[in-house]
Image 1 (cartoon, rainbow over the protein chains, first blue to last red):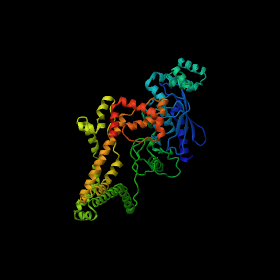
Image 2 (image 1 turned 120 degrees about the vertical axis):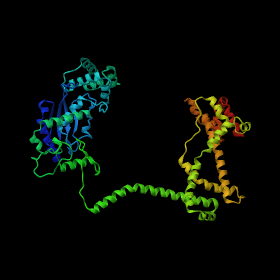
Image 3 (image 1 turned 90 degrees about the vertical axis):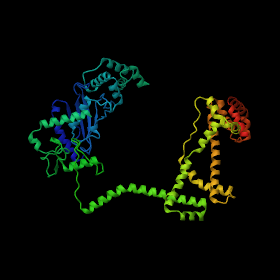
Image 4 (image 1 turned 45 degrees about the horizontal axis):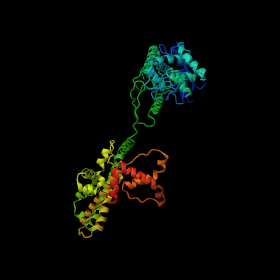
Length: 199
Length: 352
């Protein structure tokens, strides 16, 4: 890796470790290899959102041309959010694309992602299904996002009704992820979800 | 995005709040994050924008690299600070008179070339038009006479008049008099008894309006540009030939060509009106068949029947096929003839 990139990540790493957000357990960064090109991030679900109480893991890849090009970030933890793909974890955020500036750091990127979780942008979606639900059925969106946070990120809020429906689908031969994605996408309509999986 | 704005502003607040005066005096580059203490060598620092705090200072070389990244190869693109949006003041050193002169020349040439190319193209078209005009004049009035006429004319007349010849021909070609004539014939044929007798197939329009309420096919077909161009430019040549063959007795060559041209346009117009009307009748008459095995088997014979009915005298392809299709032909033709009195009249016109 180019000297400038690893030098900078080294310095940024120190900055994150020292930052008050780490002290509050709001963000966390871990090194995965010695040359600072692969990192693992972790952000806490922002308070007063469906993601509250969850821990969300992120994969951070630092390119050779860093900081002139943005780091490649995606969610490893599954999230139900209009700007994050519920399947791949890919993120739609302008600062990770053309609005990147060299003055941004790992810390600001993680804080921006936290802010994105708190205020979704359904008009510029990454996951069209989620965005449609967010706009059309806000209550269902909130309870679905809470349920996902409960299952994948360790949140405390969940709906018994949803759990039962997932069990029903698992009873007829689906795996959990498949059942959850289908039910969430169909606004928890069991018949539609069955049709989507088996039809 | 709102979230980013909120985030980055909170970030700067946090920094400026926590930063002591001592830290502020220590410079740190917002690209490589190196500080004064880190640097072994003596790098060049700049403060290129309105930013304060951590993003105030940057290394000259780091910023150069960032500018390169933003410009993506085009060295004249303007670059602004991603935080405060101040446009960077990028200056180039003075390289002496010669470089400046060459730069100016370069810019001028770059700007001139499109106009120059357009001018050359227009000039080429203009000279082709002049040549065409001159050739046409010599063709119409004769080689020697043509040269004499053009020699006597004023230069200005030649410069404007000669290229006007092909232009006028093309514009003349775009006047679609046949369509107007066809509409007039259609309008007056049912009212004038003699015309009714001569041109029975032109009565069709009114009857068809009574028959189907879904509207008749439109008359207007699209203008084909290349066709208009070719036929307009070939008109003088064709007129000269027809004039030479049909009007040998006429002494003046100009009159001969004019007569030839008028004859050609008239004959072509009449044929065209006839063809158009027949196509129109044919289109009014088309039918979509049920997809039954019987219809599939008889598709070809019945097709030939409709052609026969619409008046195009096409001989049947071979005696054997006519024989085999004869029974079905008579059946379908009788049914067609029964439901439209027009088709029988068309057969009559064809036999006339």
